[in-house]
Image (tube, helix red, strand yellow):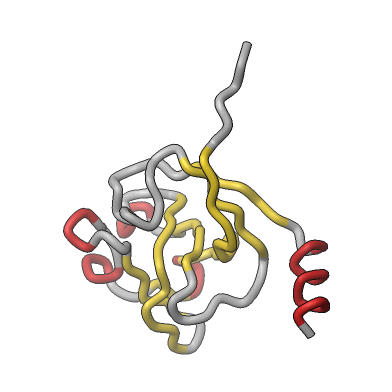
Length: 116
């Protein structure tokens, strides 16, 4: 069974995002790190990268947060560094067109420096 899961993860499309911003996910992620995401159904305690469809509500277009609660396709998300996190504790649940999940974080690595 582990072999099948490993093969599925190997062939799943992956997208990378560079972490920046307020430090709301410290110490889990720091600025400049690259998170690799896969398209899968998120569960409670998964870390997701998502687009917020209501910029005024979220103060940012693309965010990375941990899912704390799920209820009928509505998500309550929080940053790991609560004192520095603008999250569902401030703007409430994200439902319907307010959230578009881009991926579930599966790996993190340091960004490689580019040589010119």
